[in-house]
Image 1 (cartoon, rainbow, N blue to C red):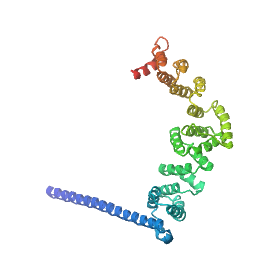
Image 2: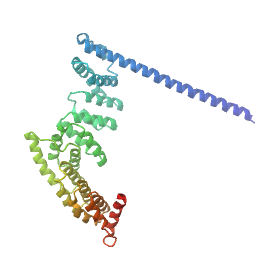
Image 3: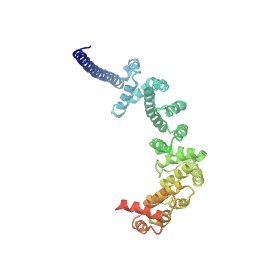
Image 4: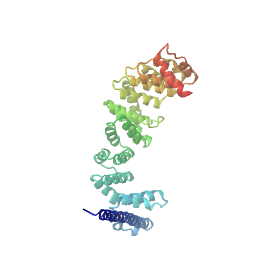
Length: 360
């Protein structure tokens, strides 16, 4: 029979050795992190010195000295960002163009097709620093990347390119997502300067697919509504867009119709009131619910009577949105809610009570 003390002794020794191994592993990780940080810091300092030398003495700058760092794309991108915001003089712009043309962009084009997502991500960051016209097919491939971080950064570059071709590619790609995703993608596109508005409008005025059109409307709602149209081409686009908007208000596609209502409310809230009222009787309950919600955001007591009728709508969401809208219209709206009784209409009474309880 095995001695119990021998078993305990063996287990104790095993545990002790395991603890020692864990400590050695932790120490090894710490040392690796320390030396890695020191190595990267020395690398950054070396690249920074070479760049400063290229700025201060451009005639003596040896491009080969920095070419050997082309594998460290992340550090080069970081250094370019730092020099862009530093007061380094006109020579920096000449050096920057050289670095982008001969090192960063050629490397980024190769990395954009890598199997490693981090390299594709760095390629997107490099493209964002460049004023080059990058191949649309390459950018579209990155926009469709399965890694969200890569796709988002590729989209940022495409938006800032201010190109109809790029905007069309973005719209084609992003309009395929779900509605929540589309709202996020629309915000990415709208993060660009308002000069992309004519590009989005142009695509909208000639588009036939209802889901792509809905995405275009959502994108426009995130862009400034007071953008001045100054060119003949843009004026023609706006004229065509008016025709498109009124046609889309009568579309059968619910997503498209809701997107148009939000766009009209964003573009001219006051003028959209009559359109919203007319859609309180729409065949689709979602359109009725959104119309009631937007009328409440207008805050005009003029629409209280119409919203009162929506309290009796057979759809719960329409009743609730109408009740919340009335609660936002001030005393007149609150009075309508307080006048609801269970004997008059149980549905209207329940919706009114839910809102009144939140107001107290």
